[in-house]
Image 1 (tube, helix red, strand yellow):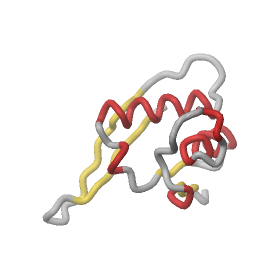
Image 2 (cartoon, one colour):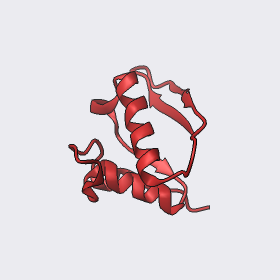
Image 3 (spheres, rainbow, N blue to C red):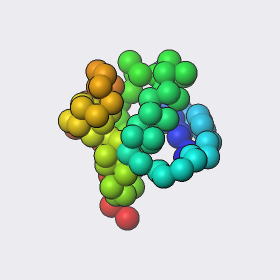
Image 4 (spheres, helix red, strand yellow):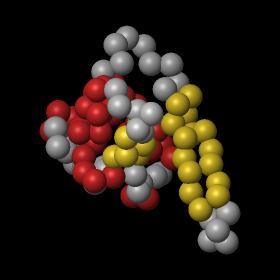
Length: 91
């Protein structure tokens, strides 16, 4: 799983960074993806700054986003992403 961050600086320069490149062991479930995603964001201190998430259309990614928005309460903790901030690729 690769997580990248993209942002614009105060002087309008586009920046990006590979935040995590991690091999997921076992089944790539929505729960595993959500837990890994949340851990990385927490480690980087980005949870309060998260604007949105872009993923492909795989159902495990959709499940992960439902878990992170609280639409699916399966993680049993407060949501870290607003429901309208999951952007799916159209490819």
